[in-house]
Structure formats: structure tokens, C-alpha cells
Image 1 (cartoon, rainbow, N blue to C red):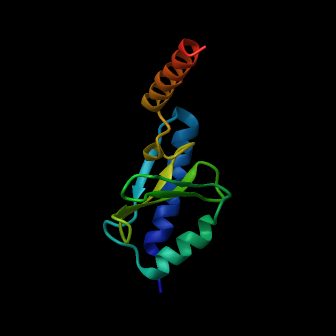
Image 2 (cartoon, helix red, strand yellow; image 1 turned 60 degrees about the vertical axis):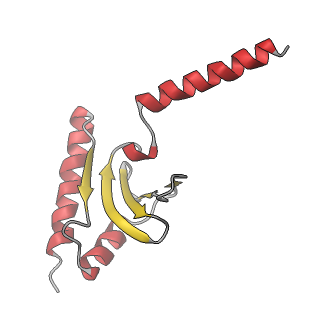
Length: 124
């Protein structure tokens, strides 16, 4: 069976990694529209491999991102509730954007830390 979709996606990952290196541009490739064949999905997972980091979201949709053995390449799964996978992605970025690594999250972290520090100073 020909592996047209997975070979095309591997090429797109390479182009996206080059753009990330040159300009810092992050990219998301969508794997579920249209869906990959089982053979393409198996080949792609084997080719990209599994890295050492997995990120789970505590939101009600139980999203998860698995680092591949290629730095800055993440396999993402977004669930509709706990059971059904609604979306699969390959994200080319230092960290998956939807996992909460962004300036707005850092701003929120600083606000929360300052509130804790103020409360601690007030309770001295």
C-alpha cells in the first residue's frame, strides 16, 4: 500500500522545521481532516518515534501532546469529552501552543505569584 499522505506530511514537517529555525514561525498540521489511513498513521508514528515528554491538559476535553524523537515536533490529540478523539495534529513548535505556553500564560502566572506574595506579606 502506498504511503502518500504520511510521506507528504513528513515533507511538510521538514519545511515547517526550516521555517521555525529561520523565522520562529510555528505551525500546526491537521491529521484528522481528511483522516489518515491506518497504514499512513502507523508509518508516521513509527517514523517520528516517541520522545520523553508527554503533556496532559486538565481541561474537560483531556487533550495531550507527545513529544516525538524529533525536537520541536509534537503529536497532539484533542478529545471531545474523555472517550472520542476529535482532532489529531502535528505541532512544530518548541512547546505545543494549546498546552498553555504563551505570553498570556506567563502574564497570568506573574499575577498569581504576586497575589500569593502580597497575601504572605500581609499575613506576617
